[in-house]
Amino acid sequence: GNAPGVAYETPEFGSIKLGVAYHPSLSPLPLGIPPNGGLPIDKRFTPSNGIDVTGAYAGDFPGGTYRIGAGYFHSNPSLLRTDGNTAFNVTAGLTYGGWEVSGGYMDVSPTSGLDETAWTVGALYAIGPFRVSANFMRAEHEAVRNGVRRERLDRETLQGTYRLAPGVTLGLAGFRSDQTDATGASWDGAGFLSGIKLQF
Image: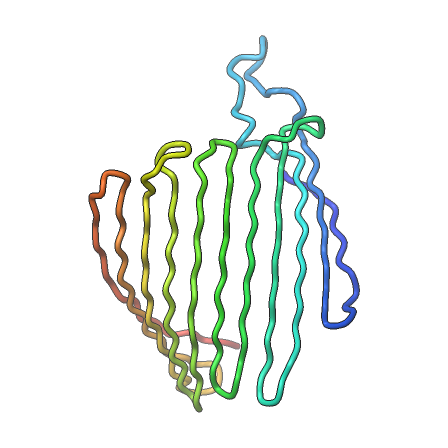
């Protein structure tokens, strides 16, 4: 609600769609507490001049479909500066029969300099009222700027759903995670969640 912007998306041509958006800065000067300016607010946490560009390509082949997407984002404290936050991501997926396989990768370079990367891959199979899916995700984060050691999180998830009746679906999901900090210490976790979804 406090980051207005303007965006444009091209019509589809040759199975390709492109989009671009710009989000202007609302506070060109450091904010503070009146009456004398008070404490400045960290510019990393205020809306900044940001631009993002995205693209998507989709097609089909006998028995299935495929899709590829990519995006880039960059924000600056002002139009005259080149530091700031940047991020790049790419996704791809395909369907064939009752199968769907997809994955994604993201690389983030925040103003703090503590770079982050994350990737995930998963598969889903649907037959009749049943759907079963599994995925793996890994995320890494620099503990110190340009440091050799990274904090890491691995997560595996297994999910299943059953359509009991039109608009009524039962679901069950289980997960396991392994987190390792910059010192090499690690923690494991596991759990499951069940529920029912009603659609009207």
